[in-house]
Length: 178
Ligand code: 3AM
Image (cartoon, rainbow, N blue to C red; front, side, top):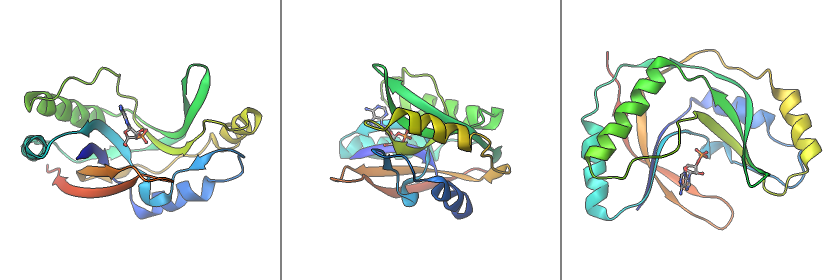
């Protein structure tokens, strides 16, 4: 199974993100049902490891917290802009949950994540996008922000890579409690 841990987003936020999409030739927009904030990419694991992951996540105790999305950003690799995202504020509550998940998954036997946590919601894959259009889009939408939303659970997703888009399935929801 190919797995990742993420926050799902309220429907109204997905609707607002979807309303932004469009107008840059050559990009692949993420379909609204696929919007999420990745807390930890796990990747392909055998069935017994998926069970260990689930157990480890189920033992996490963390409180609900506020999350705000504000502004746009891009990720680049080798001088090419690969993806376009909405930035999530790195609040203490979010950082705390992400750190707990990282610790739990390492204890369960996964190798440590080397990349620094940069919370974001990807809205488009941009390899091949017209750069001036992309820059214009970022400028035009940079004031995008959401009201703080309360995060009350996180989710273990499985991912099947399709021809056009990946199919993400929520496998287990873990509640946060005060
Ligand atoms: O949350 P976003 O959309 O930025 O790009 C994949 C997606 O990121 C990323 O994990 C998220 C859920 O699929 N991803 C895919 N393969 C990855 C890998 N090998 C990866 N992240 C790190 N390493």
